Image (cartoon, rainbow, N blue to C red; front, side, top):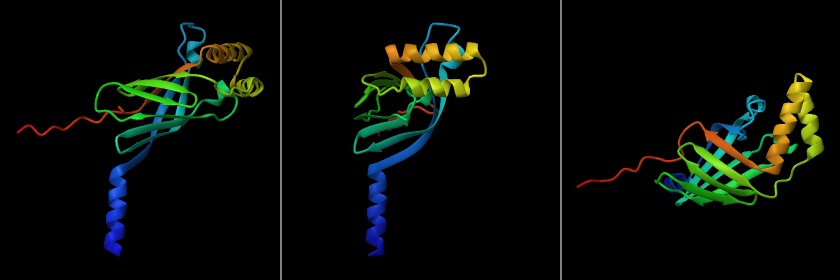
Length: 160
């Protein structure tokens, strides 16, 4: 019975692989005044693989949404150079270790965003820049998740 449990646990491990990744999140901006505030650290990005599928999940920076909004994106795992993922709040195109995400219908609590930005800003100028960035994001919700390693594993082929 112990052998059967060990085999089942090992088999499940081969079918499901989950790991937490360090990452950063970037709001694209062409405004040099906003650029210093456009990057956010992310400590717990989950990447799951199972049976040819891939899932990435993370929490958007609360400086952009006001409250914790969990993003879950699913798609087919690929050994190629391009992944397409989609979820309730948008879709992503991933290349290497970077995913550009185009959001839709994000729940944004503007009052909570303003309160959070007041907490983290050290000056009125910084607050205004962060506020403008968050409003730009709300109007055009696009972001880039930069993972600490590529999503793709090298393909090993047996050349006989």
